[in-house]
Length: 278
Length: 177
Image 1: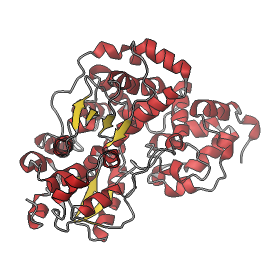
Image 2: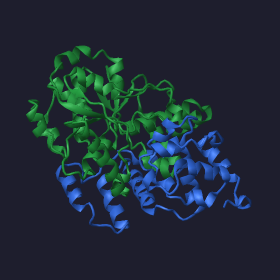
Image 3: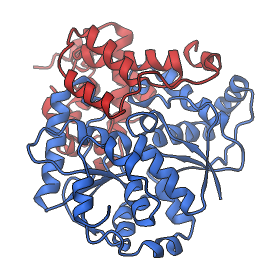
Image 4: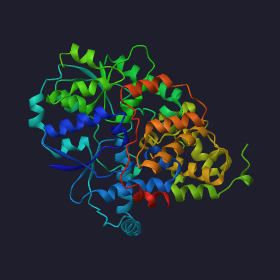
């Protein structure tokens, strides 16, 4: 199965290990990710914060680059939201569609599907692949962290919700999901750069919340959350933050620990060794 | 005391038009403020901002820190029993604040957003190292986070050279309107 692939800026640099592990996992489950040619930044928080025109047009260019008939898989939840909102705004407005076609010199595709990694699990029967990895994760206790990615603004409220997906999939692979209170707490996004103290207080609350329920690690599906949780935590005792895609690949046996794990600011290797996963 | 004579009814009209959100639906139930992770750093809670807009108290709403502190995580929008798109209201207020030239309560946050867009305009993507260096220069805050930045470079979490798009002129319609 083929997907266009939109990594987004966060996966290009700080979340490199997220990118590598996502590609490795996809390969193992026979999903071909074809990077969207010459993709650009989705505009992130900054465009919609200060310039509505730029915020509307940046995602549009990406939509115009997507080949017809191939779903677009977006690695970053924040980019996903921007791309989906831009697409929906065009679907709803014929005049805007005409302007789009003139602007980008390409027909608008109202049927373009824009999906997150999570949606692979509802589209492809991954159970036979997961079978290979059953119980491979040796009972590692994790706090599932979704951040704001499951929070859908009112215009997307009828879209599918993937709450509980990481728990379900990773439990099948032998990890132990914990119930806790901070799974949907925002990581602070750009405040991590513009107001570090503010981000630190939120991040410390999240990491401490995970340790309160005796989690050995946090698992996240967003590269930006991942960076903020690692970077802005000032607690003396920290726990590793793993990408969902890293644990999937670890269970699949398609990992490349030499390239991924040294990139973490909180080294997960002692924990993974202790659990017999490395 | 609220002096209704000095209130500007145009404010709620402008916010409604630009956010496509009907603020008259607000029940003042405070779910938004109670769930907001950053409410502690705000001068008005989100429901108070909505009230300011309803009353047309433009200077208070547009000069508030709240509209800049809000990161748009949508926690409030999900909690809102009336499905008010509060982050869209915050976007609308920020745009109005910039247009009307009022004092910006959180200039550092605005500077950061401008640096991000500067990078996107130049490369088509964000170059985090350059954004942070320019931001630190402009806020004259050169040394905080220095050790952290070096550690990120060591771990290759920051790229020295930007990832660029090939056809930067293809972005012209975005930045030339």
